[in-house]
Length: 225
Ligand code: 6GU
Image 1 (cartoon, rainbow, N blue to C red):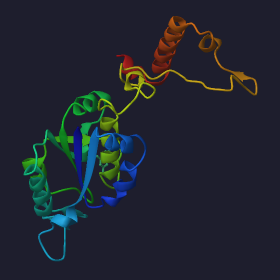
Image 2: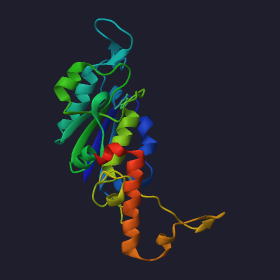
Image 3: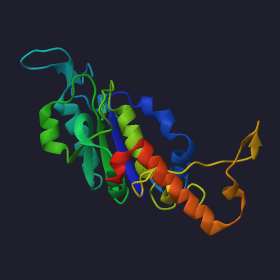
């Protein structure tokens, strides 16, 4: 059973995402649990502040250390965590190999940044891994946490069935997935490749592999190196 605790100042952004589709099934089936935490609930003053101006000046507010420290410590007092991940554009670039490794873990904390970021001491004291989902800037870490949690949870054993198996995903063998087709076999004269209707399993497998290699060479030659 994998447990992911996500710490955010706008956790409601993530609620509906985890309440649907494969992620909902994963939670109902007891394979994974996602628990959302509002940083504001751990604020140390009556105004429930969680951010303040940056020392030394500069634009943008900084998420303060105290509420985040209280939240992480409250969680760590209840169970052991394998990683405390901070989602940030200056983190390590997310790719499938990293996701595969994280899917083998038990309990994870994900901290979402906002504004100009979090106090550096949060990163120094609590964070074990910093991850970016790509070279572009989002307004907060919530979407990045959703992307990372989705990619991880679908790999937890039992979450996917044969039909949705991760074994045929793009990237699992550094190849993009081949094209797929369904009925009708003829749409306005656009017909499905004949080999797929031949029933010849070995030939179909071979065709799919060739298509994967072709697609990867055309679209992502960097993956073949
Ligand atoms: Cl993890 N956070 C933000 N705010 N922007 C990003 C990102 C994360 N990864 C790519 N862009």
